[in-house]
Amino acid sequence: MLGEYKIKYKNYHGNTLPERYTFAYYEQKGFEGCDVSLEISLREYGLIWGKNKDCTTEGEYYFVYFVNDGEYQKDNGDDVKCKWYDSGWLTPKDVIDKIFNDGWFEWDSFSSHIGYTGTAKEYVDEFIKESMPRMVKDMISYYGCENILGSAYNPFPIFKYGGYNDETF
Image (cartoon, rainbow, N blue to C red):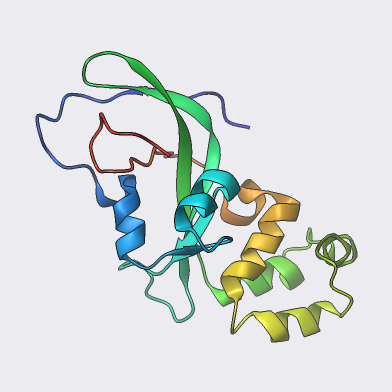
């Protein structure tokens, strides 16, 4: 997987962070997760989802997922341990392609892992319209984020309050 990240941010002298670097952004946009608490979903399960301005296809979701532990450097030069996240988009068509068309998805072992006894078609018909993100969560729990959402090329920390010197998730 990816090695540890250490990024030195330049001193922004009060400039604001990109929105996706703040937990408040995901709260305000109504993101959801595996747990009732969005904070627990992000910290403990490492996966949240929602719609954002870039979701232009019907049924498309934006996912934020845990990549690995690392550190960043505060303005004062102190190294701070944090978790690194990345993001990706999936549509219902993307999910269906992974299950039926990509050739690597093993339905029998996956369905056994999640405790589903029906066929792949029944699973898709049942879940794709009403809970596609939870379906993706199941796929990630078995195959991992990299296989479902792709490699993390631009991971980022998420700051609780919105400043480089704030607490991170």
